[in-house]
Image (cartoon, rainbow, N blue to C red; front, top):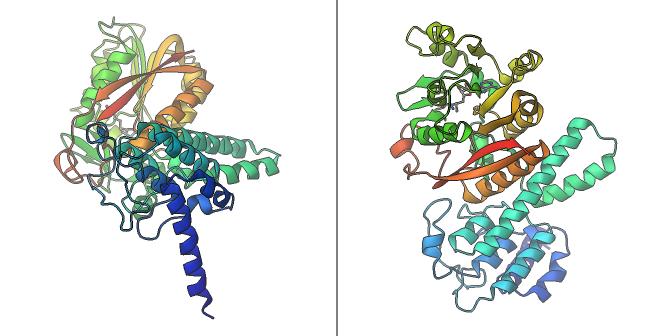
Amino acid sequence: MDDSAFSTSEVDINTQTILLYASNHDLGSLKPLLRIPGNATVQDPETGYTPLHAAIAACGPTSTSSNAASTVTGDVERSPREGGAVGEADAEAVDIQKAAAVVKEIFISGAIWNDLDANNETPGCLAWRLGRKELYEMCVEAGVRAEILLGLMGKYEALGSDSEEDEEGEEEEAAEETKEIDKGAEANRTINDCDAEKEREKRDVNSEDYLRSTLTFDDDKLLDADRNGIMMAWETDIMRRSVDALLPPPSSPGNRILNIGFGMGIIDRMLASTKPLTHHIIEAHPAVLSKLQSAASDFGPTWESSAPEGGSYKVHAGKWQDILPTLLTDGLVFDAIYFDTFGEDYSALKDFFTEYVPGLLDSEGRFGFFNGLGADRRVCYDVYTRVVECDLADAGLDVEWEAIDVPALGGEGEGEWEGVRRRYWTLDRYQLPVCKFL
Ligand SMILES: C[S@@+](CC[C@H](N)C(=O)[O-])C[C@H]1O[C@@H](n2cnc3c(N)ncnc32)[C@H](O)[C@@H]1O
């Protein structure tokens, strides 16, 4: 007997049955099948649909979905799957409550919130594109749960918990809900696609390699050796609004300011123009530092000596991880702190606001950071924005978000992205964080 052929067809029938029940929103028939481990994550080999995709796609678009939910990952319209069982259905006949109950059951049974189909869409992307906001919200909530659990696991590992059994249990549970740990911890300004796996295989951006890499300084962008965008001029408005949120205009002179990551110096020039009492900049890349020290630099010796009496303007050369312990020991305190590095993952940002902000920020001060987590996929951005809010609260910080419109920047390799390896921003809204002590 041909075992492989037999098992393949058996798997297919199982998969197709599950997808059919999911797309029919047939909870009664689906439930017993979902009790079997692995069934919540089966995928159609052709469409890549999981039960979540099937249940959501079957709802079809809302009548307003073309306005409400533009395509999240590219403007590819998908035609209904032949046979119709797991395609995008006609909107009319859909009972959204039934669909939501099925989606809920699939999540409870261990579905992965960020699995991709053949169209490069997660279930959340699909729900957004179809204008199914209720289902989209369920995907975001599931993503937040999974990522928070993974974050906790990281903490347990770091603490070297004795309760290994508990840890393993949680690990399995979290692994069931998210595709892989790094997806929840993608770098703020590197590769933050929900499914960056393939990208990362091609070219991983990490802090060590980045800090050794050769940089290219253009008028409108700063690139690393692989032409990853480190900083780009289109972000100027975000920097302007960040400064205004940290030091609301008309800001009086005399503030104490700390900025992590000089980049193109966009935010530092704006901060400097507020005439602070102290202005500390921490920068780690040798090429950025040598530009900062050049005669043409506006942050060289003339700037340093222009500090008001009793103040200090200073560029610290090195990684913030190495510099900040000294600033803490020296008792420095700031009214405004901004954090925007490159090549570091979310855990670095979290360490920064958990370990250092409480000691460095004045009790009435404000802290901000570049919020670029998952910014090439709406559902990831929404998940990470909520995860960071939870982690900020754990660190004793309250965050207010200001939504900022981001103009269309062009497709891959076009417009603003010409000469840049990949778009790290594809969304039309930036959520600007302003944090204060709770
Ligand atoms: C995105 S740019 C900052 C852009 C800046 N906000 C601006 O307005 O131009 C990030 C900067 O952080 C620096 N950087 C990366 N890792 C760092 C670290 N661990 N410590 C200090 N600086 C770091 C990079 O070299 C780069 O200059």
